[in-house]
Image (cartoon, rainbow, N blue to C red; front, side, top):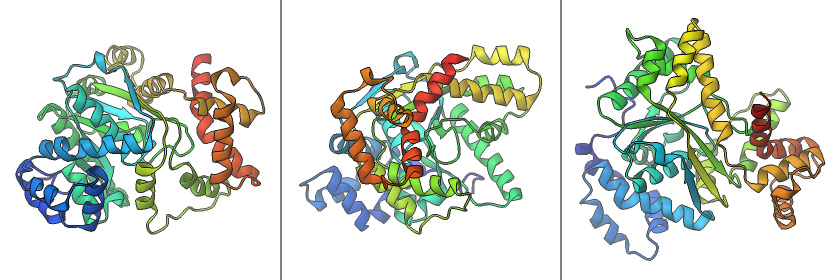
Length: 377
């Protein structure tokens, strides 16, 4: 037994048995039919028998599934910044978070096709309660972040998670993806929670905070979808917060959100890999002694990179102009793009409700608002 057994993904020697255990699950059939349309079920069931590692599974099946998702629900994926990374080095990718499954799946496709070290990726255990999803996640090198624990258990869980990430990065040369915050940024505001950084720092041991964070090789990731396929699904929680009411998820809400994120129209997508945070940490060490303030400064560095490098699609400018009743950014979009966005808004929320309208527009406009604020500093 390893202390990481509760959260780790599968070892390669476990992969074939685990894959066979869900091979005939109806959800697997649906996934494979989507990935390989027109191919007889028996063909991929036979191919499963030859899968003996996570790498096999990702190369032979997952990559094809993600490419199909892009082909059927987007107008393409573009990237920037990855050419500055070393192909044999493991990095800690700290990313803004829009979609439960796609954020990390798309990043890994980019890494796979570019010949970089692919990631182990954090996922909340609340999202993989179903056995099929749990197995599929661990077959795809996802490790679990335990949710809903008591304060005492949360501390222990965070320590284990920190040590596991440390082990992956420093002993296995495995890159790691983790969101900058718990849960997705439903309002379009991308900000790094200090709690995430505190968790990472728990494995520092005798090293200073700054020295340890330099070993992590943090790369901020900015992912931008032209259309958020789950925009309307995020509205109930935003409206509950507006009314200062407790928001309780529906029974199948997470699963519905996962499917909508995968199948819903996204139009164009862009992923940018920021510069490795390194010499900036020396500046923090030289000017800030307090550990919490150091963490705050690191969080601000990550935020700055994510916001500055976030691709602003026409939808962001349209939402800003509609929200502010202006045509300030009319040169950034066409009239057709504007009308399509308005039509989408009318179809996905109650257009007669001014609060819903405001939150929907803010969800799209906030990346632009935040970039403008960053430029003013």
